Image (cartoon, rainbow, N blue to C red):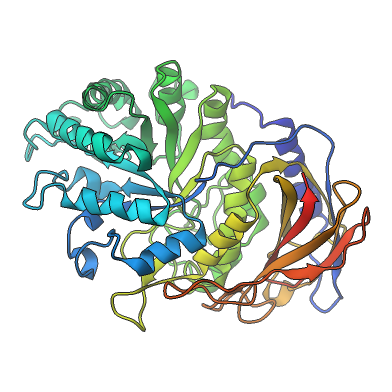
Length: 531
């Protein structure tokens, strides 16, 4: 089926980005490139949910000693991790991943529900909501006896004690992949099978019937509990039909089937933009992550040859626009730049700029949130063990991008008109809150194409009393290769309150606001008295 068009204001943002990109890059050393940002005519976009920014973890952290951790990773006693969640503005924590369908469910081991108790005590201290995923896959060769009842018992336990910090229950992880299914010559979970062997999409009907059975058991034990699903991982049109041209993603099909059930909090999808990096070098990955193609592309491409990236607009149109059109909220519960990451890029300063842009792009396109997958311990992680302090935790530059988003996302998306005659690689987003406007400018030029941007922000209305700016910077302007970052001139640690500062900007009532955004940096301009 044809994808639904984006909202009018989103289409304007896409058009403006393509137009400015086509003007061509500005050479380094040519002086600051002029950029103007104003609120465009037309309706406002979505209100950004408070729990938009989040992390995703595997099932393992509910066990003590997982991945070298002393005790439980999620514990109210882990003050370093609690501090980082609060500082970064991480308001959503998803427990899921492939290990959900591989490990014994919580509550069946020797420690009972201790891992769950610690998880929700941590969530209360960190001020975050939990998406808790139950196991769905039950292979015939090694089944969990009465898995539905096991899940129901855990659901009832959580719902009775911790519903205030529960965002939703999910069931299963990436059930649309071929390896999840039984098919000719390979009986796995015999309840989820391919009607046409070798065609993963043909397993959708048996998956849905199994999911409904498990969901009913969960809801019986936890009446009124919100559900999320299907946590799909494939990017192609995976639902089988007799006419292959009519295939749609499982996310779209699930949204249609659950549209009127009244129990779905979010339609959930996974998204790794760069896919498997293969032999992608750090420098190539940085160029990819900051490229206009990822932000504006309308078809999958390769960077370099042999790899495949999936640009945001294509992914939205082919998987999630129909979900939004059905009136349901969607969330990227597992997302990142690459599968597994590229050392020096996924954990370098380029990731801070990429993360900030990625969050704003999806917020502008109606997402309910994004959870960056933090699988212990990969180069794509946001939070990692502090190498200088055993038992403590630190953030990679990706965490700085999340914090910058949290600072500039309290409110409603506004359509931003971007004038960029020099065609430099830059994106900008406008959010209006209660009494304040936030304009986030991300200058992604770097290396030989590094160019500062002389930005003029048109005032959203008369009588503005003042403005200030928070700057996200790496080691030096124009260099996206470093592994350090600052926000507001300060580092973020898990040991002390963050001391980043807003810097005042000259602002006259009713007059435009001017600032310079250096190459390979980002700025969040706060215009007080807006909205």
